[in-house]
Image (cartoon, rainbow, N blue to C red; front, side):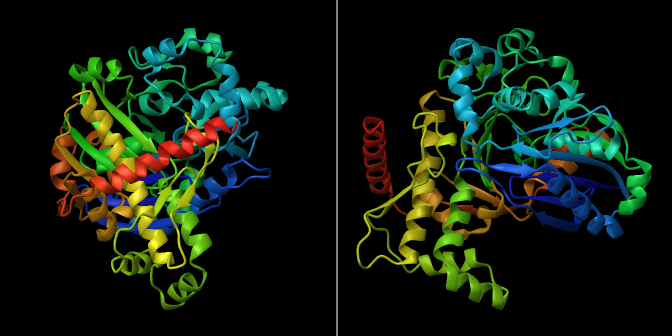
Length: 496
């Protein structure tokens, strides 16, 4: 018995056919651009996203004859407006990086006390929540917003296009800022305060709930089995946490993607400590279990930005030779010793509520600075931000027993060793790639009755690869980084 996981991210979608014992039979990836017609805009074309998903599934189809179920995960806050005819009313979808979110939240935050919002939603980053996008479209496109029969999230939109049925799971719903994580229901109180029409939003279900079979015409078009069951998916950070082995309270997964997300699995016994520290809380795949999610929003975006703007000749050479430019950069920076060069990864003001403006910086360059020096400084700066997330957990005595890194950047032994050194923590990696699609396949396997729960599925699906142990004392790197970061923040605050 096989399953299909579909992971829709900010810059592309991945899909895999995975057996009930965790063997990847075939994988496919399709990329699409982040667009913007004005400074500060960061949007996706939902048509491009859907066409990319279809192309990936069509590529998988020859190996998917034994697939029994499929599930979708996606970036968490982006919305799709769908009309009564089932077609998109707006192709443009605002992402978490779009600066219009911050401008909208500056207005919305006056409607409900921040403490009340947190107690109901568990969210600490309201400037990127879906309520901002909802309000933007409601004001800027009032006719289309009124015509919308359904307002879906990207994962539920793809599931709807596949099956004709719409639902959203607890984790994705929690990214709206009008979902109650205490009752696991839409919050009428917050919806009323923010002017949200809840009748346009789908029913909330647990991840893995059966929606229905794939549309027959679509199955014929893509070459997929007619009886393929489509299940409700989840927020991509939840599927990555599952596929990364966060299966017991105290397990942490570092999702090394466009966003670096530290996802720590906690049970109800820890909720009081989380709330005391006003730490983020998001529902996990089942009732009574939660993820405390800390995010470094520009993580992989910084790496991609660096490659696109600083590695012209090297990238051309690597592309011509069929090598990864990231592997070449990792190899080159091993010959570079740590220096006083500092990189601040704040390339988007939207993602950092305490700043409100971009202030990404390389500081401390001299005439001997090379691309390799810059790249190493970037890895160290990103690792310092990771260490800051662990500091919050430690401060409020939240148990963190095991750390597993997953995602593209976890394949870099250079980066993982730097991160272990800077954080002063042991970090494991997995032999298997693509934790997101693997986590979705695990959800499908449990729903199909192959396993009694995710923990049992994990014993078959997950295989440890390498343990990175801190090898050198790196407190000096953190002290310099934090001193420069605080000074730059203060400068920007005073310059307003």
